[in-house]
Image 1 (cartoon, protein in one colour):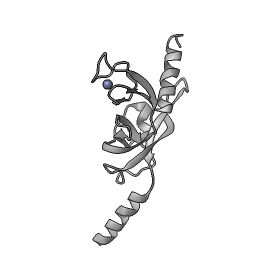
Image 2 (cartoon, rainbow, N blue to C red):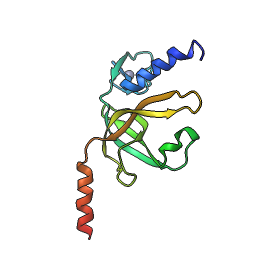
Image 3 (tube, rainbow, N blue to C red):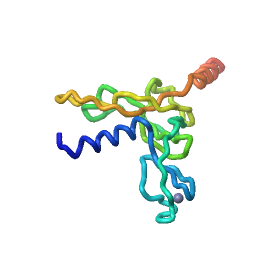
Image 4 (cartoon, rainbow, N blue to C red):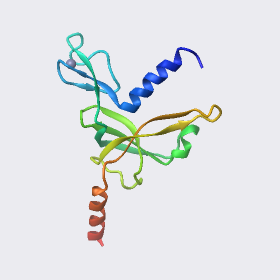
Length: 149
Ligand code: ZN
């Protein structure tokens, strides 16, 4: 491991774990991952660090059946574009959710999970994924299914 990559890795790790981003103090636009320059205000923007609540909704999603080797154990997997309550969209895996239960608009929250394990080194990477916020929507769909019978 090189001496320069470790601190960078830990910085990113902390960012992933705490869901840190930035906010422009001039126009209130939020950014994830963090940014140094506001894309709207450019030099007039005043970038401040913020921590996101981790709550959001599924904006769009897809189911992945084939993945690179280190992600194979997770397939089939739901990968979604989650729109955080504060605005930015984050691409992430949805866990604790059946493939046929994911819905656009579903409320989700960030949770801390294993991302992947490297074969030889045994290094395990962690980061955030999203899970359904509650089960109320599954009950709703069960009722709908019952009504169709
Ligand atoms: Zn701005």
